[in-house]
Amino acid sequence: MAIIRPRLNDYHNLPFRQEDVDFAIPFLDEDIPLYVDPFLLWKIKSQQDNALHTSIVNSFNQLGHLFVKGNESDAKAILTELTECNEAGLGSSKTRQGKKIGDKTADEILSLFKSIPQINKQGFQHFEEIQLLIDNISKDRISDITCSFIKSFLIDFTIDQCQKMGIPIERCNVSLYDYKTNKIKSEETYLPVNPENKQPIILIPKRWLRFVPWINYDDYFESYYIKDVDKTYDGKLNRVQILNFNRNNYDLVHTYISLKEKNNQELTNDPLFSQIPIVSSKRKLKSALGLPTGKTNNADKEYEDLMVQLMSSLLYPHLDFAKEQSRTDSGTQIRDLIFYNNRSYDFLKDIYDVYESKQLVIELKNVKEVEREHINQINRYLSEQFGRFGIIFTRNKPPKSIFQNTVDLWAGQRRCILILDDSDLQLMCEVYESKQRHPIEVIKRKYIEFTRSCPA
Amino acid sequence: MTEKEINDFEKIQAQLESLHSEISTLTKKSSNDALNKFKLKFVNQTISEANKILGKKYKPFNDFDKFDDNDLPSNSDVTMMLGQYLNCMEKLRGDNVNRNSYSNTWYWLIDGKESTIKTAPPQKIQNK
Image 1: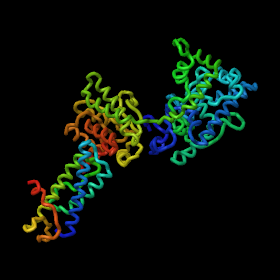
Image 2: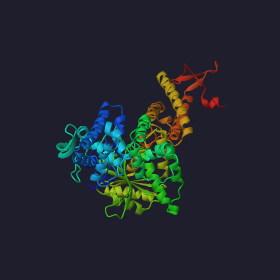
Image 3: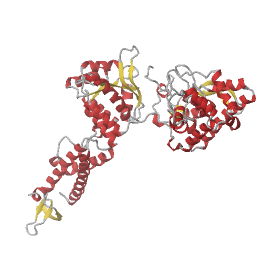
């Protein structure tokens, strides 16, 4: 099944939307570009999450303790093992496979427990501070270490969610951190499995995810270091020098962390998708309507860019956006917009049942008049994963002969191709603003008009 | 018309007027915006009742019974149609009322005879 950017639920044919579930729906062939921020676990008003944060920090400090006590190689081995959590599938990897840190970096991290007296004495309060003290440590490592420390909890969460949503689980072995013995061990459990590489998958609660952790190097540098520490910054110091400075002046880092703790009101999780504001949709609509047809001054590219942003927001939450400008397997053709068909609306269920539309393809045509070739082009895409339903978005109403062409296509091959134009886009934006109707209903209206024109 | 029909007429006419005025306001704000499902449901209910009262003779359009929710009728579509219904209701009323020549008051006709139910003068006379 060649679904574009497949997600776990698409593979198992489970029609839930991202909005309906508490976890981030994992992709099968790439990572979710978000990270677990341990600071959220500390902040959220939930005893469970706070306790998990405490256990993460305690476990991390325990590793430091082990290192200081002389079990350096054990501590480094455990830490190295914890720095990658492929089961979580978070980050920017295109393959869902990450690399662990090297022995040198592990040594650098754990040496902090020896070299910084405050840490030696009382450990870390927020272990993500290591981003400010060690080079080559950033959000992906912090996220993976967090997930590894609480993997046992995440496995329980995953099993619970899988039972709720009907996701199949299989017996598999995962390595996890044992809180009691402070060791990594292998455990047999039941988890959903990536059908492409048989790797177990762990689901992550949405409430813990952010694009950038609350404590991060860039924020420290821009909003604290230059402002409060080095007011006459001449731009000469590089990252390594600043990290050295931080290690030697840990009190400053500690103050920064205290400030971040105090100002945590703005800290929230990042949504996996956020719609564009109404003002922005109006501006984009105006720009799209004002574009000339054809390719003059790259108008076609601009039209596509505007439409991608508009359609992904207008059709949310009924359709989750999958990908723009996706190539066919041969790489010769490009499909403009692809949405997952979650069957979350009666019309979407209809096209799934009647036309086997698992993913919805929208072709964008910034042309004065849709031609027969455009219909043939989208018709060629309508293969197994897209089913037999497609949409062309263009600038003007199609001529009667072209509309008749789509009706004939339905009569001959039972394929449904809808052609929407600027007036439909305008109405979609209008209802997006007024909230009187859902923009998807405009597509439904077109579909019903089309079916009325089809021969009985 | 019977007394019950007159009662129903007055109720539906008042409802149509109220809907017309409400939706006219929306039309002024945004004429092409689609009317929401909740409002459309009650517009359709009122129109169906009006159809019963008007019958074939007074119904504004033979091929219109009510709005199809799937067609996403716009505010201006609905305002236009409600206006048509109000005019046809008024035409029906105009044909079923009579001015008492002694009291100069308008009364409904029941079975062709002047009743005791008062009414306003027909609009076309008011407007003269």
